Length: 137
Image (cartoon, rainbow, N blue to C red; front, side, top):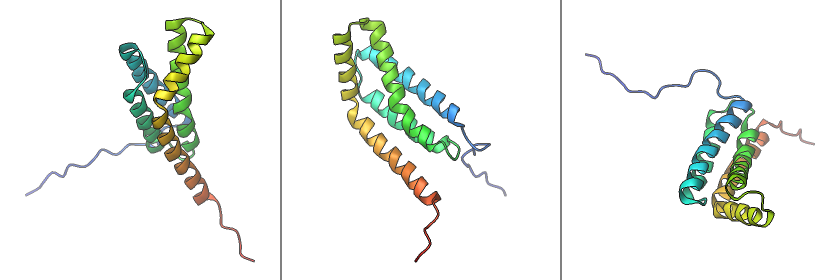
């Protein structure tokens, strides 16, 4: 009498390197934010949630020491994606490009703030735990 116990598959190996975290976060953000920009012609909840998910994924699946990269990459990747999309769709008209770029960033600002606060909390907490305590007196 044997029973099968379903267990979650374990990830083999130590996790993603810094380069892997950057590439995967950038690809996911570019894909989903680009699709949302094409379909809705503006950023919104999908882009915001993707930023939160890729931040968590980078923290979860990255190796030790990739926390900083996991925190910094999503806002930069999103900004690059939006800027590239706007240059391709609007052209290089500085006044229109600037307004649309700022509007796009403003529309996902709550998601950027929440993910940044969580990411920096994790990074600084990890850094504080790694620091050796000061000797007393």
